[in-house]
Length: 357
Ligand code: F6P
Image 1 (tube, rainbow, N blue to C red):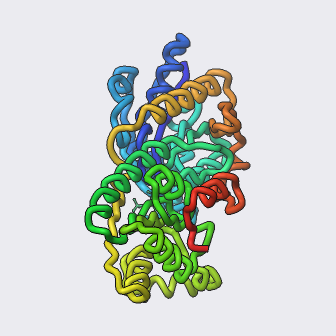
Image 2 (tube, rainbow, N blue to C red):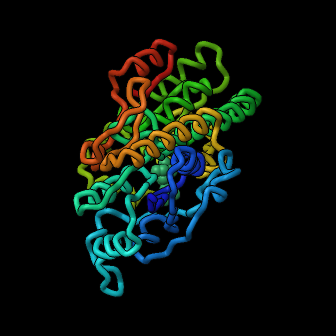
């Protein structure tokens, strides 16, 4: 008998259910008897002992369903060691619930913050296996995270829709793409949607270069311009500020996000109207794309294999087209960013895409 605790933590994404289904199916199909404890709403469920018992049936019919059957929440790592409002030691509480239920291991699905806590639990002596989820694809130790390709589809569809109206009206349009502090999602959706200018956090922009690119398009006879802007895009001047100074600037800013600031600056410098579209959380919603269904199922199956072998302390990741196990201590606390000198950026530039640099 294996007693498994499972939880999904942090911002949700597509294929969380597919991944959990993969874990459970692979365990059950091996003939292993399994008891599954589904902790509700991320680490919160583990802290407060809020769980439901699940059977194989609960994982049936969820391959294509977005969201997570367990619910999710953000439990910031930076305050995980602080007592809660009632003085409860959260780390100790998670350990006690784990031992009380006599779990063999925890299966944790999450992104960066989630992995820091998962690694802490490993250091505290719990058996942990993790799976890499996030639309941002910014998790260290894996070339790909599930959710990413589905989000690329949605953001690309948004740019495609903007394209036709931009062409009709001869306007400049900005589409703001999620991705937190990294540009994978914006770069991929931008290239797939044929954006003319792509702004990502890893390549700070110069507004004059953006205006130059817009004017050059006009000179070449193009009546419209599509700009894909990462929510974390940053200007060259702002990139020189300290973290604190930049935070202060954002707090004082009259713009809801960087895209609106870029739009106002383009208007100021060209007199041309700019429209901003923010698909926001739609990028995390809905059914996973086929790639993510397959990918998450494979990762889940491999996680099941690790559990059967009793190999704990790993994230099941994907590197150089192979599914691999990555030690949690190598993943936790590191951010995977786009390399501005990577071939994909060079190729995008060869296609005439401006990065505003
Ligand atoms: O990490 C996934 C993500 O969707 C980011 O792309 C985005 O910056 C953030 O989560 C939004 O977080 P929340 O759902 O808490 O607003």
